[in-house]
Amino acid sequence: MRAQLLDVPIIRDERGALISFESMLTLPFHLKRVYFLYDVTASRGFHAHKSLEQVAVCLKGSCEILLDDGVEQQNVVLNKSNVGLCIPRLTWREMHNFSADCILAILASENYCESDYIREYGDFLKEVKVAK
Ligand code: T46
Image (cartoon, rainbow, N blue to C red; front, side, top):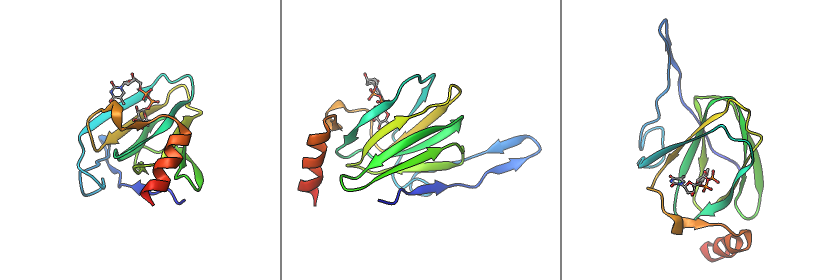
C-alpha cells in the first residue's frame, strides 16, 4: 500500500507560523470532529473503521503510525506539523513510539461512533474481503 501524505504550505511571517487544513480542499472529506492524543505512554489504535476517514497531523514531537489495508502494511513516521497522513476507511491502524512531547491531532469525517470500530484483526480481514 502507498500511504497518502497531505503536505500543506506553512504560512510564515515575522509573527510565527500558520497551517490550515480545509474541508474538501486540503482535506479529502468534510470535517466533523477533531481530537488530540498527548501524554501518550503506550501504543494505541489496533483497530479499523468501517466508514470513518481521518487525517493525522503530528503538531509536536513524533510518533509512528502503522497502516494495513489487509494486504500490505506501511509504517509512517510523523514529525512535521504541516503533513497530514490520510487514514482511509477499512485500514487497520496502530500508533507506536510516541515521543514524550508528542501532540497528535486527528481530523475526522464523522462524529464518534463505537459501532464503526472493528477491533478484532480477523473481523477486519473478513470486512476487507467482502468489500473487494
Ligand atoms: C483512531 C485512532 C487514530 C470518545 O469518547 N470520543 C472520541 O472522539 C474518541 C476518538 C474516543 N472516545 C473515547 C472512546 C474510548 O473510551 O475515548 C476512549 C479511548 O479511545 P480509543 O481507545 O479508541 O483510542 P485510540 O487512541 O486507540 O484510537 C483513537 C480513535 O478512537 C480511533 O478512531 O482511529 O485514535
